[in-house]
Image 1 (cartoon, rainbow, N blue to C red):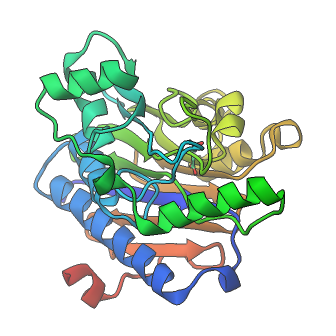
Image 2 (cartoon, rainbow, N blue to C red):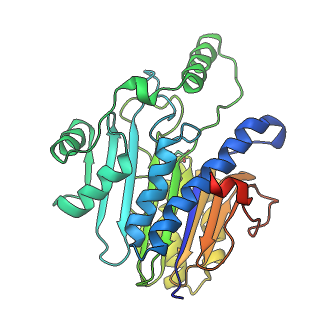
Length: 321
Ligand code: ASP
């Protein structure tokens, strides 16, 4: 059987086990298992890495447990705004969007840009018009804004008014990297950004080399965490550079990128990467990163906490749903 593999993340953030309720933990694990399966199915049928990362990310964009598409966090104005990027490691083509509002699947819009547009990155209404022209489904705020995120937004407004700190809300970007049977790598990242971000703020996700990067010869990378820190460090490209020019292994390059300029840049960081052999590495400084990996002929696994081993199998019951 030819080698193929997919790895995903549903965001990294600083959180302690006591701060995460059991229902939510279960929803994350189930959501990761579902997304892994969507991506794996594409690869198993001989589909491309590009289609596989789109399918896995689409699954998490549909799932309100994650900060992408439906259930995304809200800006200061109480609105959802999405960033997304996808990169084909074979052709080095990219498609990216920033600050789009009504597009149901921002990663699919990014993919259509990759395939059909002479530009790499479209933002705001221009990106939405391109989605419309390409018959991508659009949705209104009632689809994207969930009660949970509305409450988190209201808490923030109270915090601002009372100048007191509230516990952080659970938000975070989703991403996927994959290797297909033809040896092609791809990376995709999709996000609702940071809770309470300014209108028009764009994070690292659609910045190529910042939050997303892929080349067949070396690796595919998708980042999560504080976008300002990640884009200033060009962390996705750093993983590539540390492997290509300094001869680091995938895991070493990923770990070093997590530490890079940490004194100056600070912030939560999570990096998912995959090399040309389909091995995955996860690096994070948060103690918590929603993540999963499934390679051909192996058991799938999902994990949340740092202490969880990479090989933790997903319960069969979860995968069948
Ligand atoms: N990196 C994303 C951003 O800054 C947010 C996240 O990963 O939580 O927009």
